[in-house]
Image 1 (cartoon, one colour):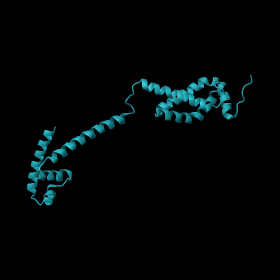
Image 2 (cartoon, helix red, strand yellow; image 1 turned 60 degrees about the vertical axis):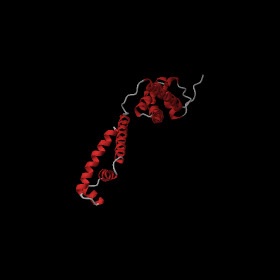
Image 3 (cartoon, helix red, strand yellow; image 1 turned 30 degrees about the vertical axis):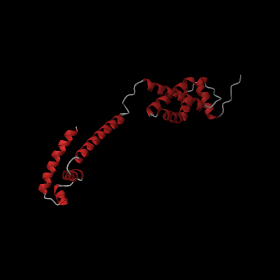
Image 4 (cartoon, one colour; image 1 turned 60 degrees about the horizontal axis):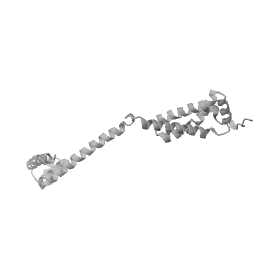
Length: 184
């Protein structure tokens, strides 16, 4: 049976790799590595895992190059090996519990979300308690703590002496504390 004719430089490299020439296989690897890496990244969505899968792909291809039909294109063969290696990685991920490494941002985000939710609940409780205050106290608290006005600015806006504003503010805060204690 006659051996198939190998066409082109890639065919020549395949033939030399099948004869055991390591440099020929390394050249084939370097030509196809970007494609394999792209495929592995799309599948695995993790650069380290993709790099491992590509390395495993090339190792398996090197071991099996002698059985490869040199009359066929090598790219689909390598892509199939890579797909299988990626599937192995995905299966391995399902079997082993995922470590927190690489996902710290999710934990931090969760903690900040919980803090934000807690702060929002406290703010809502304060607003609800302020709404239960008499109109004068509610207005004073709003101006001082929500608009961040000074006592003299509040006195000027209400056309009231500063001493009266301070007194109202003291009483409003005391009543607000009572409301918040009742709410909790």
